[in-house]
Image (cartoon, rainbow over all chains, first blue to last red; front, side, top):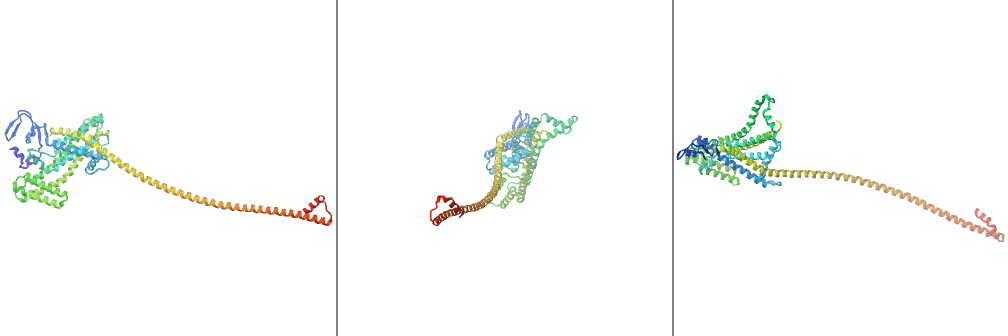
Length: 359
Length: 156
């Protein structure tokens, strides 16, 4: 009954594992034994299919695609392209207004950063930096969507796994870092030619006898750049996501028993958390916030009603969990922005180093 | 946490989005920004130039004003001097004219006096002759005694 168990994760570790599992489409090798509700089935040939569970993902190995990561990252990239294209077409030199002004502010910020740390002439660098900054920022921003919301909703329509933050997928972050690495390699060779080899072999000790030592040190340094670039982003976002999951787990898993600790959820549905109840609560809170934004409800009352709603549906645990989620989300916004910014700045700096003749 | 095909998928996607941004987003936005920057710069330059021009004009006005004042005072001085001279000239001329008129009058007086004297002399000479005629009771030949009579008239 693995399928059912993963649909409604009961134990703590299963809940976490379920949240960290991508939706994978890949090639199962011939001879693999599939477990399903209909029973065992041994594959006679290589089969491309959606993976059910971690063991199938492991069996797929390299020949697999994280459908959710790709879909969200491409979707967000398209959002970036459309929004900025729209702003570019709307932008005119006389008077920028509202959102276009904001877009221009970002463009100017990126342009200044690039001018600061990149001194050669290259038409690619600035658009590259802008794409990296906004795209990664959008991908990171998905972290602020309530952890359970999208996976649970998609589960209702039959999608088993869903990770909506592409930057918590090392494939995504390393894919971008590798892209940057290829550019570094290309420009190092294009600009410096033989000088690049010299840089790797005659530095830091300028003597032929030290060539192996130099080569080792410089290569390690050179290869460490893309890894640090990709893994830094991945690590930060993964850890942030993990904390959201743990907070969610804390109040969801403990929501048993009385109305004080578990609220309506515990009274109606017992130990397990119920998607619909939380969806209703979520929509009500959204509605209250909307009223506040329209000016029909004071901020104090908005907070109070939200707290009461959380208290009713989730009890003390739901309330404290909600507040902790909010607190961490507010803090996480800084990380989300900062990591996108760091990735961009480091990319520009690394490519700037590739363009500098004298080491 | 497995590395798989997603890695390359992401790399390709990355390249495509960077290409799109480089082709369709960045140049337009940057051109717009630069144009605005240039506009603002031009405006500022223009304003600075205008204020500089204004200051220059004010300075020029002051200089012109000073110049005009100096010129006016010099003109007044000159006019005063000229007036004085004209008066002086007129005085001299008047006195000269006076002198001349005086001289002319004097000459006329002299002339009249001489004429009167001449007339008188003549009449005296005639009178003397007539007296002498009377005395001598005979007519003295005028022609004969003419030189004598002239001499007498001159002595008178």
